[in-house]
Image (cartoon, rainbow, N blue to C red; front, top):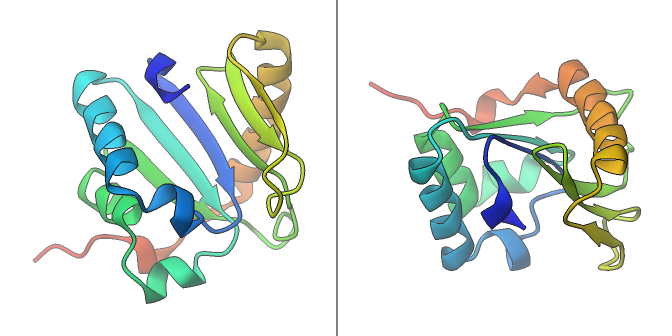
Length: 140
């Protein structure tokens, strides 16, 4: 699904599960997307950023190096208990897991109506969220 992304990827994850998102191949694919699609923006809301701060994570390292393309925020307290996991590609395709701790959900490559609904939900969480200062790249 990431290969169909042209401009926007919106993503909510409980903790960027290391088993899925800390893989060298996945990070390389994200990096390739950033360099081949100049207007791509990836916005991630991570509900629990604690593990990302305490341990190295390849995807977070990439986000820190390429802030023009990637942004991570934590939720505000109103959304802290949001337990779904979702990825929305260009307001067209989506991956939706109603329970982030289970690997069961829905995938659709082309459903602008449902993707639009999920995008509105994501935008609400994103706008209320806050950048996590612990996940910023420090440059000297």
